[in-house]
Image (cartoon, rainbow, N blue to C red):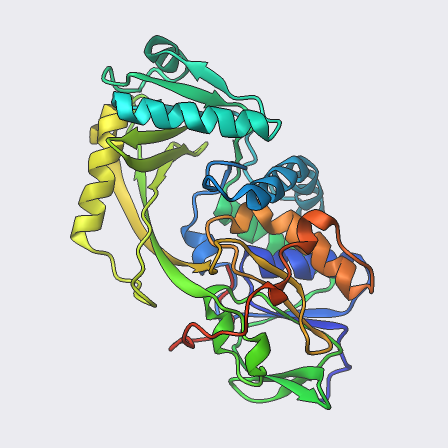
Length: 393
């Protein structure tokens, strides 16, 4: 592969972040390759596709919430561009979310969320228990109140993978099914990458978008190794049988202090999730985790009892010390980071891609993005991955 013409950029990792960067970079005229052993089949494949700007942020994470809001507002245009470029639908639906509380304590949490969203310029609406069930008739009679978040949308994460691969192919992106063993450099400047299965790619820039595997890349000086770690998440997919009532919108439930979400798809399936476990690079499915998730989902939507369980999937989200992404230049010339997106990889894909392409073009980024540069942490390493590098978020 060393005989190839030099590339403008190599993107390490082919999840929604890496593929979005590759596609947008090619659209701007750059010669780019995306490298991943299984493009789109890391945490992107296990995701639910919710585009909730505040649902995945916590109190005290105001900067991240503002970034999420900016990303959510960019999604309608990004969805149109991607569907046009790929000639494929991605399941973008702007139906909003109902957040349902199962007891008085859960309802007080919702009061705080309403205040937080309003302060960010969003348009949430408090709901009585009756109003909750009017919006979503399948909600349990035990729901004591809730809220509507019309600014929350959704997209089908697996359709996005197909669309991004098609758009990348049409725009001239080279997608390589392999792993990156090392970033190559000379005199402190990136020169390309070495592939696990042999060969090198020469490139003037390398973008690390390998999710929780990003810290395991060889060839990186200690001070630029991203402090990301795997955070295990479990999603279940269930399907309504013929004649079974179906959900009409995203439902988030607060069940005695625990959270779960149910995301309906147009094909009659529902994605159920919300788990977070610090178990390293473990992708096994525990019976107890499935039980707990179904228990909470059934408490909110009892009709789930009648659905068929068709899939259990685990993924490893790339967590950072402050739960926010690392986006931008590093101290190694030509090396860029686009990792650490935690629970917001799909939501933040458009703004991340545009920011990285702007930097590759020698331009700057907005202040909203600029505050998430990879140099905001002291140099630290959270433990290199023990598996393939190149599995993006």
